[in-house]
Structures are given as structure tokens and as C-alpha cells.
Figure 1 (cartoon, chains in turn blue, green):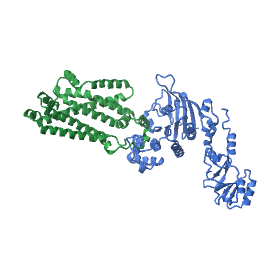
Figure 2 (tube, chains in turn orange, cyan):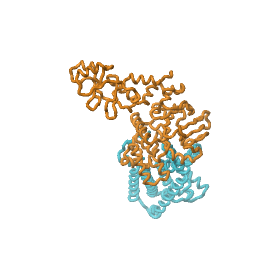
Figure 3 (cartoon, rainbow over the protein chains, first blue to last red):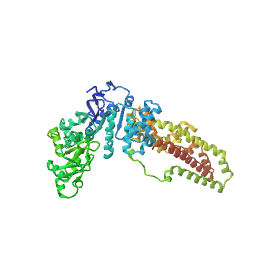
Figure 4 (cartoon, chains in turn green, purple):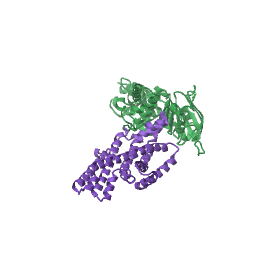
Length: 378
Length: 253
């Protein structure tokens, strides 16, 4: 990879009066445009590490480089204005309106009023909040999820290259958290910021990170790699324990439906005659077929048994197909749909809803096995 | 997380305004008592001369000046000290100060004035200093508490955005501490106006003179009217304090 955007070189932090340093001797590179997740058990020093980067905590040893420039001795307040910072408790200024909150760093940087106000509106829209409604409100009027949206908008307002996030979605209910995570990933696709993200939640780490650094006590890196490699090839017992038993299941969130080989299930386009249908089913290995409408959209699962059981027209036999998958969905979604479906398979459609094929539990299992997922004994 | 609670429990508008309603009610009540005493009791020439309007006026002005001067002194001294001891590295000084000043408040104001008198002699400055010492604690304590109750996450966010320590103090901590600090100042002013009645002891003037004359010459109407006036003055300032608390509170809180 190219030159790292952020480089920590032998950085350490110890507090007087304690034996073990909070951060031992950490060397860490963060590359431009990536999301690096620092994850580890509580007390491992991951938050401290994050705050060493913007020097909210001054390191006792080592150097910090930003874009190749040594910022270890730079005026720390000026440094922080170049780095976005989001914390779990959000920390919006309660005596300032939402727009004043978002405009904090631009104001510190001496932007003029019109520029700031335009930027504030832009930021609010970026985080899907209507500027007309929220601009002049105060933080206490926001829900937890909204507050963190504003927190993210505030951190991005001065368009910093680097964003530090300390468990940003940790204090938010699971449903909202999931939504914020997805929105954030979508934002990041456009923004391409360099992000260091701290969490204690390995699932969040796998979901958010391009690379994950698993830290043990003293902020020592146990393993740093892409989520795929960490899941399939944990470096040691510590990492394995930290991943927990569900590593294979977790890995499913990293793969998409398009990675899987689609099962060849015969499809029948409406209108079909019963005899034709029976013939098709006879040739089908699974004794199952998919009934499509005129636009090639899947309607129902048809099985031989269901056809023989009733004299009903074909479009009323079998079980209806209620959920379908798209190639961009994760395999974890696919697994869920398959388990719910009456035939143990899920229909895959393209963006317009046209039938592409089916995926089955068997094909999922063979993908996992061929990948060697979880091949290391645990 | 405190920010997530959208609406506080709604209070009735009356209960919400209680702080600005109580004082005026009492002021009216006391004024009626004063008027009744003046109209219906035996007012002889001595009482009349004690209660001469120009005398009362001068004494009231004295009382207000004493109250204001000592309170101003307290504000100038206590708030910077409060800020200084809440900065990092001075927790011991803070405990020491709060304890010592608590002791000063445990002393009777009367004794404090006399002690200051024996060092500084008679005069208005002695009274101002004594009163200021006596009422330093509420302002200092509220400054400390007010600054310490500011949500650490907000300070952390401010630092993280790139505020300098000084900016954090003036842009975040002090504005958020204002309601608590003003409450302390309000307490101090009321204490000082009330205690200014003792200023006459060391030649500091004030409404205490009327009460004292009434006592010495055995004229209860004079005592009562003097006392009522002191109380009304204190209540007026309490009321002004309540109004200040209401309107100087930062928006959004």
C-alpha cells in the first residue's frame, strides 16, 4: 500500500504511579480512505490509543505522523481542528443550537458566516436531517440517534481528512444503531475519509472495518488484518477467544449472495399447463420449480406434491414466495431467508425483481467449506 | 445519556414561576404590616424623629451600598478562585478553601464584624470586608459546583473539536455553570443586605441604626418598621436574583 496517512511510531503512554503502561509500545499505520477498527476487551487501551492520535492524551514516548508530517510537538488544539472526533456520549454543547454545534470547527477556523451556514445545511442533509426543522433546535430536543447524527455532522463540518470515532453507536438502541451503521457505511463510500473507529463489539468491527486491529492489554496488537483473514485465520488463542464461537456465522456478513453459486431450479413462466408443469418437475432434481409471472418475477414455489394434492389452478398451488434476495445482500440475510422458506431455498432476483436463480443451504455450506472458514481447530 | 431524554417532566406554569412569585408576595405582606404599624400604633415625637423619611432614605441607601459593595467584592474574589481551584492540579487547595470558608460562615456575622473592627477600626470598609468574608462561601462553592457539574463529555467534545483550554472555559464551562453561579450570588446578596443591618455596630450606617435607636429608646414601632424595611430590601434583591437566574440561564437548558 502507499504511504500511511496516519502513523504511530513506538507510541507509549504511561501514567506516573502505575506499573503497567496504558499503551505499551504501539506502531500503527492507517492508510488513506480506510476504516481501521480498533477492537478489544474493555481496559485494553483502545480509547487511549485513539486519543493519542489527536493528542487529547499526550504520549510519553514515540512519534505521531499525519500525512508524513511529525505532529507530536504541534499545537494540539490546531491539530484537533484538522481531525474529526466523535464520541459515544456525543457531547453536543447544550447551550448552542444544532447549527452552532455543527459550525463549531468552521468557526474556530475563521470561516465567514455565510459559508458556515451553507455548510451546516449541507451537513444536516448529509446525515438525513431536514435543516429547516433542526437548524435552530437545541440538543435536548433530539433523540439519542438524532444527537449522534448531529455529532457526526459536527465532526465532518470542516471536511477533515481524518475522523476518529470512539464507540460512536455504543449508546444507541440496536435497531437505530444498525440503521446508523448502514447509513454511515454508505456515507463513507462517497466521502472516503480515513477513519479510526473504536469499539468493543466484534460484530460492529467486522461490519464497519476495512481492517481490524485486535488489541490486548496495553494496546498491544494481537492481530491486524482484513476481517476476512481475521475470521478465517485468527493469529492466536486470544484472537480466537475474542472472536467467539460464531466466527463462521460472523463471516457470512462479509460475503454477498453474488459470491454463491446459484442453484439451478427450473422456472416456469405463466401461463403454464399442469401437464407441462409436471414434466418440468420430473426433470428437476429437487422436485421443485419456481413459478414466474409475465415479467419474470417469482410468484410461488411449486412442488410435485402440491400439484398432485389439489385440483386447484397452478397459480394457487404450492407456497407463495414472499421474500427474495438481491445479489448485494449478505449471506447472513440469505441464511435467514432460507431458514424461513418452506423449501429451504431462497429466490435471488435482480434489481428489477427478475428471477436469477435460487440459493440453497447446501450451496452456502459448500461455499463455507471450500473457503476453509473456521478451518483452524478451536 | 442525558442528551437523549427529550422532554423533562412538565411542571405547571405556577410551580415553574414559584421562584419569582414568592418574593413579591412577601414584600407586599411585609409592606402591609409596616403600614399597619405606622398607622395604628402610638407614634410619638421620638419615634417620629427616629423614622424621619430623610434618615430612613439615607440608611436604606447605605444598606444597599453595603450589600452591593460587599457582593461585588465577593464576585470579584470568589469566581476567579473557584475557576482556579477547579483547574487540574489543585484539588487539595479546593478542599482546604471550602472547609476554611465554611468555618468563616459558622462564625456569627456579629462576631466577624467585631473581629474585623478590632483590626481595621471603624468605618464602612470594615463592614464591607466582614460581609464579603462571610458570604464568600456560597459564591465560591457554587462556582466550584457549577463548573464541576458540566458534563465531562461536552468538555471532551470541545477539546476534541480543537478548543483551547481557555476557550473550553469561556465557551463551554462558564456558560453552562452560569445558573449555579448566579444562584450563589443571589444567596450572597441576600445575606449581605440582611447582615448590613449590623453595620451600625462599627459605624457603618444602614438600617440597623433605626432598629438600634428603637431598642435603646424603647420604641417598638421604630424597631418593627426598621426590621420590615431590612426584610423588604433583602426580598427585593432576592427577587432580582431570581429574575436574573431566569433570564441569564443559557438557552437550550
